[in-house]
Structure formats: structure tokens, C-alpha cells
View (cartoon, rainbow, N blue to C red):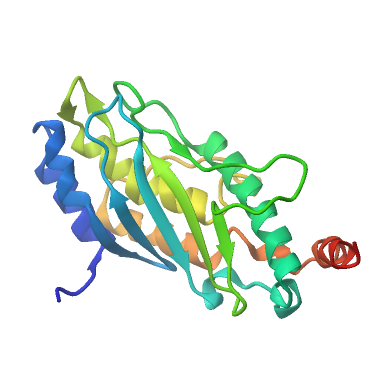
Length: 213
């Protein structure tokens, strides 16, 4: 089995297929290691107007920083997952921008309403790890790959949303272009995970209240 490739290899691939037909994006299918999480590209859309590509971000416990109390019961994990799905949705809205034809550049996750309901957009495990399932629109002009836009989307926008940077008050910083600037941003995202505030007392109080219903 081939070893997992990293985000730098993903960026190189996207630049290599720049300008090719949209089917060249099929090469993105697979598993990619990012600082602090692993990105699985499960399905690549057929064209920029089709249903966006399906991906999953897997974050280990040392990245999420979830308090054990927040994961101690099924109802608490459900409450945390619903909260994180809403945060992810808000972060995506604050981060993404149009990047070409059709659905190019979008990042979307199923966002629950006011009620906490069982869903599969975010899954929190007992050990504090989690899986976020969402879709991304791979950029194109017409049906030609926009490799640089795709590299920016997957190496900057997706980590910004996964790291909760889109809501934390910092705003959306200019996208780094160089290898070292990209690495610094990804490292910063790892050190400032999108879930960190789940240690706060109000979250534990909310999940405890749900336990008592």
C-alpha cells in the first residue's frame, strides 16, 4: 500500500493538472495528510455544475482538545457534534469565495437547526477524536481545471475552516503563495484548533442539561 501523501504533494498535483479537462481532478481522490488532521477525498465530482466533491476531515484527540466531560455520554457527544456542525457552517460562510464556474470554491456541511438532532455531518468519538463530512466545489473555468485556485481552496480555505479560524475574530488573512508561508499557516491552524472553546463551562452545562431531559 502506498504511503499517505501530504498537502505539499496535493498542491503540486493540482498545479500539474492546471488547464486540463475536469476529469483530471480524479487524481485528487485518496487520503492526504495535513498538519493536525487527515483529509479523505471520497468522491470527485464529474464537472463544476455537479454535486460537489465529498470529503472527510479526521481530527485526532490531541488536535480537537475536547474535554473528557464533553465526550462522556452519547447525548453529550451528539450535542457537541451539532454545535460543531453549526460552527463549521458559519466558518465556511466566512471563508469561502467564488473561484470559477458553477459551484467552484464552495465548502458546505449539513448544518442542524435549533434542535439537536442525530446526523452524520460531524461525528464525535468517545476518545475526543472527530470526523467532519462536507463537500467542496473543485474550481474550473468552463470545464478546465483551475489548478492554482484548487490549490488555494484545499491548502488554505479547507484548513482555515477545519481549524475554526473562520469565526475566531481573526478574519480571513491573505492566502499564502509560497511553500513556507503555507506551512506556517497550516501549523498555526493546528495550534489553534476550531474546537478549543468546547472546554468552556457553558458547553458542559448545555450538554449536562441535555443529559437530564
